[in-house]
Length: 445
Image (cartoon, rainbow, N blue to C red; front, side):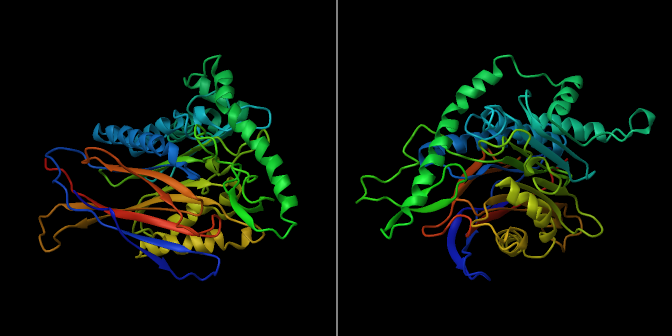
């Protein structure tokens, strides 16, 4: 396997909009050892949300991404389907208290957890999703089961099997299909874990009201960050600094993050993508975000007559922004052009930040991880040379930061990285983009 990774330079690219700063990071990595005889190949890229990742918790964010990558690779090495591998990665992310998914999800206005999740199989193009689901530890497992059941064909009386269920109906379907409900104490434990988030969000709401009043003065403001939406604000502190509001003063708080996700390609070149989210803090009960919606939260599509590349995408950020731009599907379509990096950059600029559907938004917040793959021969002149799987992987975000991890089946351990906007860049108006290339050589028989 040959990989290209490791940051070597940063280049600020011109933008069609004066409000957009695009950061290109060129990545390269030395060649690694050859594929072992009989060892399966595959690749996984995961993210722990686009939002704000505090430096004090960087180790925890990276660690959960590493574990998620390892779980997916273990599945791929055992010969599992790409959908099973991506589900394994998502379960690990959902189980972490540091992510806004599964057990660590935000609470709605009633102090309850309601989760969204979806998964897509690039080979069959089947899709499974759940929205506003409560009482299940791992929502992605229900989404995956919906996908699998849908592949079995019609139900009795010619009924079409569901691919998207919400609320109580989704919960009952899950239990009926053998997915256990949470233990009785789960809701209480979840409330305790999220109590501080609820208190902080209420404090932020009060603080922002005060900040709006202070903006009316002409005093010099200081930059603060809204913990509810991850958006930077300009606020006057009303003093020489001793009165400044610090919304990040709690070192033990994990920060407001968003949707988690993963994309996978297996040895056969099949791709899969999945996404899971607890939604916005203090959301209205019953609200469903992009993580459950077709073309918005994730997308996976194998190569075909009109698609020279297999693509997989998973999104994160403000659900309403991602829904109105159908960002996952837009990214997948864009990646069919020759230059993946430029295609993703232009999509984030023109189809997301500059989208006419979000023209009235002050800032557009979101992030994506993408991979595309194709079969190619390392030495085209050698007819007996086995084709390798060329995998290009990228991540891009308009939020303050995004935590990612990636790993191939030949790596000893996963690599992780917290991507951040450069100094001076404004969240919601700037784009960061990074990535690399991986060549997966077919194992010798």
